[in-house]
Length: 466
Ligand SMILES: [Cu+2]
Image 1 (cartoon, rainbow, N blue to C red):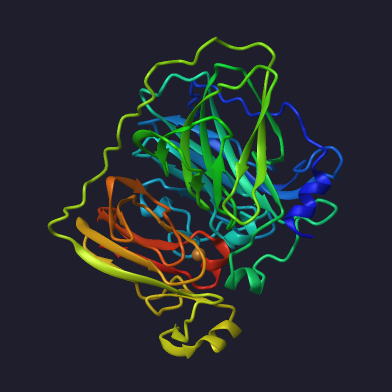
Image 2 (tube, rainbow, N blue to C red; image 1 turned 120 degrees about the vertical axis):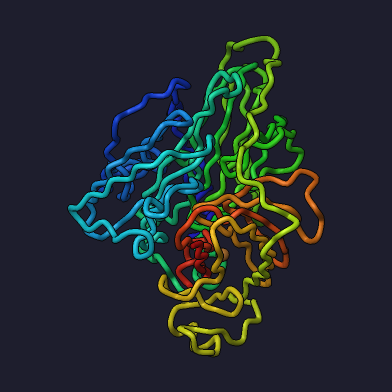
């Protein structure tokens, strides 16, 4: 069943009204318990059975974790699944031992066991947490949730909403298709599904008021689907990317949210009372409505707010551009990629043999098939590192560096007028990006594609900082 047929089939059924209302006031808990366990979620509305998922506390998304900037996060994860797990705090610059990559930064949390994560997130912004064991299956079954570090001085909005967007591959009975890690997904675009959801709901309606100002924290939890979102006649102001504030700009083009990426926007709801307006994704060939705003009959106010929307700009260590350790990084492989051979476990091998082992991709001619492989980058703490990443494949890759944010300096040789911090830049086919960061966080860190099937098929490497 392709995406279109499912959308048409379910098109008439929508679920009104459900919206996670997140209080602007933070609640600080001494510690939070998150239990990974099976659950049932009504992903596709009342006409279909609930979907069996794996979720934090059985929910999808997991409960939003919100703390004030400067406070510690203290989470006890209890594993009630029948398989090992671990939790990664995506985009947080945290101590290596808290990074949640089983087999690299910690032992997996075995069924019945617990693990306590404690750290003080250094940056305010929009982040998320997710499983980092067999991620393509565990995230694909729903093991993720939002992590919000509140700014001391946030913009004034009427509602601060989290949109965790996801993409499910469901069968006709709304159950999850079990073909995780399928060969075609590994070597092509990753697991692209047929049911896109916002906060675990397919084609939900979002009730709004004319004149209302929303902050939307968009978090892409999909295995591999990237989004390009437009908001009909509304013009969003983008205020943060990958959790880090930028100088706000009005988006005239669709807003790209690559897999694992985050974008914070401010939306002034200027539609007529009683009207509806779709949020459309157009990243792939066939655009579709991700969700729809429905305006209540009564406006909230006659004209939109005029208060400032700027966030304080991030305070991250600035790379020393006059003294950079430079690395050229070439991503190769996949279907239609032209890769002939690469190093697999230290030996040169033909692509056919590599494919027989289930792998498809290489970084600088090395298939990243294990966590104990020699690092791609090995550097001393405090070094300013520049990465020139070239995507010589036929597919986009959201490349995630753990434990750091990188300053995106240029794309295809064009310097950005305002370089911005990213942790998961989406690099399009044929594109190259120059990024720089201070390797200030000691440890072995993953650098990998967040199209999760690509990572499982070798698109990953290690960055060692000593
Ligand atoms: Cu990829």
